[in-house]
Amino acid sequence: MIRATRRDLLRYGSMGAATASLPSPALAQEVWPSKPIRIICGYPAGGLTDIFARAYGEYIAQKTGQPVFVENKAGASGAIAAEQVKSAAPDGYTLMWTISTTMIMNKVLFKKLPYDPDKDFVLISWMNAGHLPTIVSKNVPAKNLAEFADHARSHKVSLGTYGIGSYSHVVVEALNRHYGLAVEAVHYRGEALMWQDVASGAVQGGSGSIAAAASVLQSGSGRPIAVPSMVRSKKLPDVPTFYEQGLTEQAFQVRGWIGLVGPVGLRPEIVRKLSDMMVEGGKTERIQKVLDTFGIDEAARDHSYFEKVVREEGPIWIDLIKSLNIEPQ
Image (tube, rainbow, N blue to C red; front, top):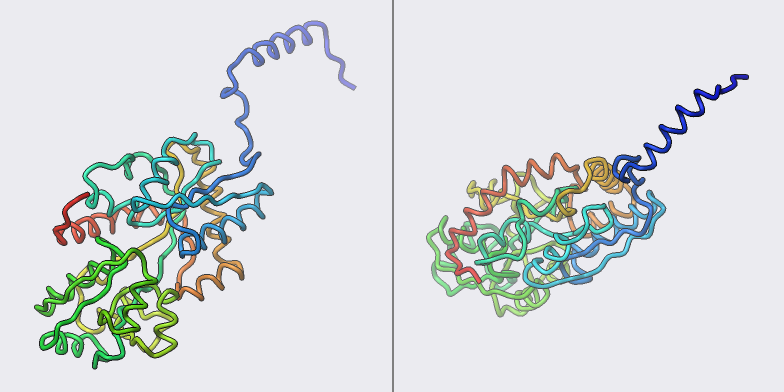
């Protein structure tokens, strides 16, 4: 047994007093998480972004043992949620689930934003928003893009979009430029009404998510003629990509995405921990079922991949949106 001398006691006692006098950051940092986590979702309940937030949030809760609450703060293309999260403490207890529009396209769509997409957030995990097929009404005699273009040259044709500056808007303008058409873009606030009008023939087609267009596809009131990306959708294996049909422009290759971000200043170890949990969660049966329902072939990726996508594809999106000549709000 080792006995401490009086000198040892005095020395250790003085060290303890010095340590106690240090400010808390000099001590071991708080183990994260030690209280509930709040995820602000910048889009309405029931949509793909919200469903992802809740599915992955549930996995984070299971892994950490802390409750995870999802709050929907929709509006202004995600800007309302972004402003709130930007102002939150960077402690890992307030995060944001958002999409590429909020983090990239809004730079062009708004004259002034209450947040800086490039400086106010740290990127945690990236998720593909999935293939967004272009679908035409059953009344349009076209099974591919070339046949659609031939029809559009001799008929008045309009295609629905789920918002100004959205991917579906880019598709209309890119088709017009590629084929020399004058197809009209009809803008909706979301996909539901757009697909109703495609089914009724009020518009001749549109582009959007496979899940939202399910009723149109299953009833036969709409027919998919192309999917973006370089590979076909597992959900629509017989539908060729734009690239396969000779449309090699970047507009048909860039990807829309959903992302988990936090306020800038979030500790790197928390970012890594969350990032790893997201990748793990994407392999679970529940989230694989969500991906299959929405026709998404790729689960969550880590923070390094997220940074790469924003760095490489962000400028492409900016140029595409600028080319639409939209007057910023």
